[in-house]
Image 1: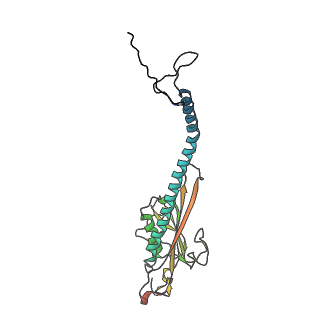
Image 2: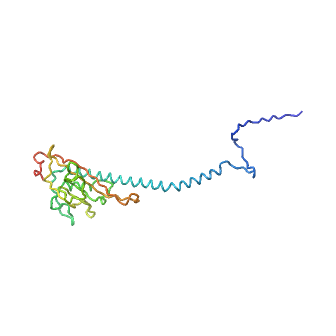
Image 3: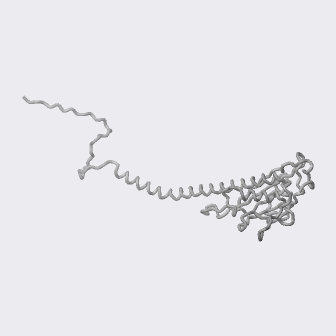
Length: 246
């Protein structure tokens, strides 16, 4: 009596993949993995794209670094101007500048043509301010009597120097002395009005500095300027008007 063996055929839907079944080439009979060639092509395309995009990304990142350093220095210039004007506005009766004794050789801290002591105090405060901006990069510090627009004298913009401008004093950095020293201008401190509320003069401080770019992407150098203005702190009635104080 023969035994029949039942063979059950699995039904495979059309278009589905058979797991574990190796495809063989009709010519060689060897198995070939699906997708091997496209993966090699994709790897080559990624390498080419990386080679093309890498310089662009590098330039982009370098630009971000340059811009960040420029913003850092500009904020430092703004902070220095505000530091100087706060100190100057608080000392309208500080008198005229007096040279230190003994006076170092080549020091022009206080000239004979009249410089208010609050201008020197403001410049000294900027030199002591803890900012990321190197003092050697500061072109000048300008202390002046500000008009209603915040500029020196009757001007409507900031001048390059105090030459020909009344009530204006400019300081420049002296590397050998490690401090700001007088460069030009004059301002008689006895003519400052600090009578609240109707007769109060305003003082302005401008800081101009150079920013050096590292890569030259935006040029080699750029001058940054900012100024701040404040009214003088009021003085007692007996000494607040011009000519009543030093």
